Length: 199
Image (tube, rainbow, N blue to C red; front, side, top):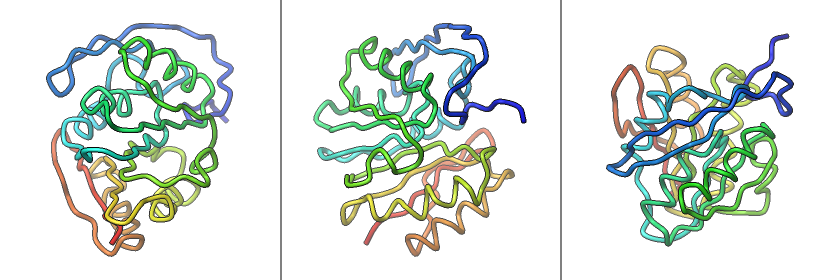
């Protein structure tokens, strides 16, 4: 079986690189590496989620499956009052996210582990994710969505991005099952940002 960015301990040689990009009108620099998701550029799905994500004025935020840290770092930069948490199963991604928070002058709590295991007893006001569709709908994506309400405060939201023609309808169905409704927040570049709110 070939190695994927959702492997816990990538064994491929590390090829490091730097991405310089502008998100929400702010310049960011991210160190990346082979063995993590979209290591050559910020992918269009993540970019759409970052540009359209709704952030609370204060409270706690979880970047679930954070990769090298784009979503959580942008959120922390936009609103320094947020208590930002970031998790990933990939040890290489966790190390990069730790470095990138410092590189971009923000603070976050970064944990290693699968799905909600690293934040088992925590609750948040928003959960953001670009779910790894390739890891499997039943194995990973559905548990990410189904587990979200238990880790959200009342009124909190799950916001995620999905390719419209690659599981978009299935993912919307998972959100409807977990939250009662899936709201389309944004569309662009073949992607949709979907939101579920805990009532």
